[in-house]
Amino acid sequence: MSIYLYSHPHCLLHNPDKEHPECPDRIDAVNDQIIRSGLDFVLTREQASPATLEHIKLAHSDKYISELYRKQPHEGHVWLDPDTPMTPDTLDSALHAVGANVAAVDKVLADQNKQAFCLVRPPGHHATKNQAMGFCVFNNIAIAALYAQQAYGLSRVAIVDFDVHHGNGTEDIVQAHPNILFCSTFQSQLYPYVDENNNDDHILSIALPPGCKSLDWREAVYYQILPKLDAFKPQLILISAGFDGHIEDEMSQFLLKEDDYFWITQKLKLIADKHCSGRIVSSLEGGYDHSALGRSVVAHLKGMLGSEY
Image (cartoon, rainbow, N blue to C red):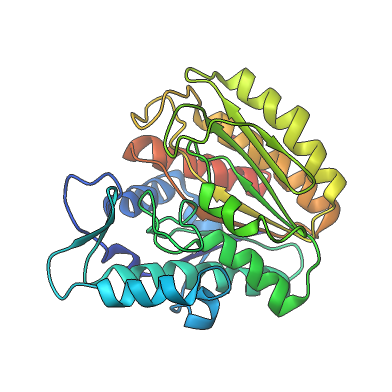
């Protein structure tokens, strides 16, 4: 079994400031660690095409899309919000990030027991229907979910978000789509400062305190998220794979390690194998300590493969 890895060199073009944590070096760090680990031999690398505007409109309003194209600078950068810069190349990068997710959905739904990882930037899970936020321009994973339903008629798509920051944009977009299950863990009292726990028919958001250790995080996943996923019986599992909860990442106060990302991925693979022929599409979100990010992605890919860590 192999994993399709979707990316594109244009995902590196969005580069506003060497000091900005969401930088092209993140992708280079992941690729370096994949090669060092030997996993490159079990990956099938694919170059993504840019998404179309029809794809983007699945999750974002016409007004928001028009504003982005109007604000696109010819040089330098502008700020879409206090954290999200836009350069002349940002839309190109963001369209390729969405395109990778769309192509990955096509691939895993066309093939039996296939999985894909989208090594892309900018990330997406903070982008709401009408607003760029938190380094995110287009909501890659929400578009992927809506595309899977539109193009393939799926009635049950699940999104699991284990980024340390709450995927507020994804929740905002899928709130109106009860046939998309959204489950997330995140650190309370941290950007975007959504500190409530939410549990209804198709939204499960679990806020955990700063200093959260592996055992506490795993218990939340095991006793709350996994049973909800199993009962939902997804036809496709999408993962917002953020690795900024790692103990070495200064963007949060979670105390997770690579083995935790391996563990949750193995658990999600078991549910995917049970309900949807192993179909998983995972897309990179956060992770800003480059060494920890690279090692965590390798652990995540090993979990998808079902190999020992």
